[in-house]
Structure formats: C-alpha cells, structure tokens
Image (cartoon, rainbow, N blue to C red; front, top):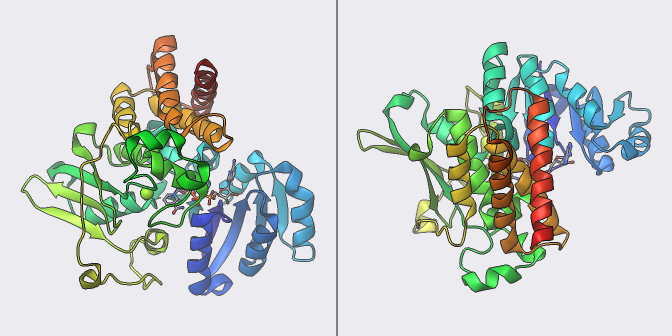
Length: 390
Ligand code: NAD
Ligand code: MG
C-alpha cells in the first residue's frame, strides 16, 4: 500500500487533497503516516481518524493538549511545534504533500528531500526562499519534486516529452485577482475583506490577498525560474480573467502547448498524486462552448509592481528570493493587521530588497537553512521598519 503524508492538511489545498484521498478509498488505499495542521485541531484530529494516520501534529505548541484530547483512544500519536512538524515530514512516506502556507514550509520540505522522498509541492515559498538549495538537495538525495501550484503543474504537464532547450518562453496566467478592474486611485483604500475575495479560485486568505496584489504571481515567476531553470527572458505573465488556461509553453518552432482546466486545485493535486499515471478526478471537464470566449491582457505594472520586483529579484540572484518572500510575508501580516495600506506592501518589499542589497549584497544563494533564516529575519525587520518610516 502506498504511504502518504500531508503537511498543512487543514488548509485549502490540504482539504482538497483529503477529499481526493478519501474518494480514492481513504485508508483502504493509502497508509497515512503524518498529517499536520495549525490551530484547527478538531479538524486535524477528524482527518487523522478518518485516514488512521500514524501521527497528527499541530504547529502550535499551545494546542497540544487539545489535540491529545481529540485523539484520545484512537492510538494516533500527537505532537506539536515546528520541530515536530519537521520530524513528521522526516518519517518515511512514499508521497508527501507540502501544503503549509509561507516560509514555515521550508524546513519540513527539506526534511522530505533529505530522506530522498517524493515531495508534492504546493508550498511555493519553499522554492522562492531557497530554490538553489532545494533543487540541489533533491539532486543529491535523488528526491523528486512534483509541482502542485496549478501553473507549474500546467507547465510540467505541457513539457512532458519535450526538450527544455526548444522552449522559447513559458507564459503563466494570472486572473488579476480582486482588484483587476478597480481604478488605480482606489487601491490605497482597499480593505482586507475586499482583498480576500477571489473571482475564480477558492483559496486560503493569504494567497487570495497575494493574488490581488499580484505577489502570488511574483512568487510563481520565481518558483518557475527555480524549478524549471528558466531565465527571466523566458518567463511571461499574462492576465487571463477566466483562469482556464493555467500556463502555456511556446516552442522555438512557433508552436505553443497550453494547459487548460477548471480552476479547481484537485486537478493539480490529483495529477501529482497519480503521477506518472493519470486517474479520473472529480474535476468537471471544460465546456468551451458554454464559456464562449477566453480573454487576455498584458499585466499593468503600475497596478502590480510585484511583477517587476520578481524580475529584479531573479536578476539579483543570491538571497533575493528569500528576502522578497519574507518581506512580502511581513508586509502581508502588516496589511491584515491594519498597520499598512494595500498599496504599501510593494514599497515595503522593495525597501527590504534595497536594504539587503546595500547591507551585504545578495552574494551567493543561501547554502543551508540557517542562511535562509538569516535573510528571512533581516527581510522581515526591514519590511516592518519601512512601515515605521512611512
Ligand atoms: P491555508 O492558509 O488554507 O492553509 C495552510 C495550512 O498550513 C494549514 O493547514 C495551516 O494550519 C498550516 N500552517 C499555517 N501556518 C503554519 C506554520 N507556521 N507552520 C506549519 N503549518 C502552518 O493555505 P492554502 O491556501 O492551502 O495554501 C497552502 C500553500 O499552497 C501556500 O504556499 C499557497 O501559496 C499554495 N497554493 C495554494 C493554492 C490554493 O488554491 N489555496 C493554490 C496554489 C498554491
Ligand atoms: Mg498558482
């Protein structure tokens, strides 16, 4: 029986994965090693019982007693804290999904790679913050990374049987998020509630706000750069409000192969779960006649400065990805907490990037987790400080 672990099981991607695994037969089909979550321990315990997991881990130490109580009599181990999440990830499993949000996904993701496992990666921050380290660790241990971010799954699928050398460029699409059609001058007044409503995708709050600011796409451009080894000149972003084409690979012979599908993460998660086979998934087939038309536009970088920052971070190299990611997380925290405006997030990130470049230059890309965490901390302080300077 195949063994699986899901890190961040109680989130939006984690719930979709749970749905797929249960539909495929649950504990009759899969041996579940570890499930991890956050404060929602009731749901975590429910999932762990349904899948008869070996261990359930909450990232929050103060939730351990509640988790223990919720698992009483089940024989399922309980643990808590970031180190316990990493230890759970280190337990051998044939397939491990990382659906944690934020840079917190990096240490457990590295544990999966250290043991040479298969890492289905939704946590894009792992590649943004530490792409060279992550990719080289996977090469050293023979670990496999399967992209789960929908655009990267789409590129991965479109590239099957193709030679990367023949690729002229890759296009990832962006819905444009909540504020695509807002007048620019209104953006500074955008509220957290308004930014948390996505037109097409049902996702966690943080990635939904990142979609409105286009920081999600900025992270995805860096993610594509790190995972596929494509330079900025071969990476394009196209606004596509319907979110039907997820990505497109354009070859030097002028042919393009696009990946289309309903905006439902169960496709990308299921593709990674069944890879290299394809199995039926509970995702509706497209009805293009009903859709009628698909539309596209060039992204406006005055509206979405995050895209320029992503390009600059790729060109800077070194620790710029770690800095951009952590500064963005800090700016997002500050926006959600009401400390800064929606339009302050990009300047705060730009400030952190500039400060990092001035302080030490970006130099080499981080060689170990400690170096990533050094730049992560630096960037969070710099982004928070910008808010003070404003
Ligand atoms: P979410 O907020 O819905 O869920 C996050 C999960 O991680 C939860 O289980 C939560 O308990 C856990 N978690 C949060 N903070 C943690 C921490 N510090 N340590 C350990 N665990 C922690 O997020 P999501 O929308 O499911 O997104 C998860 C990841 O997948 C993100 O990296 C996101 O960018 C990526 N992604 C999401 C979608 C989507 O449709 N939601 C699509 C593509 C990529
Ligand atoms: Mg995506």
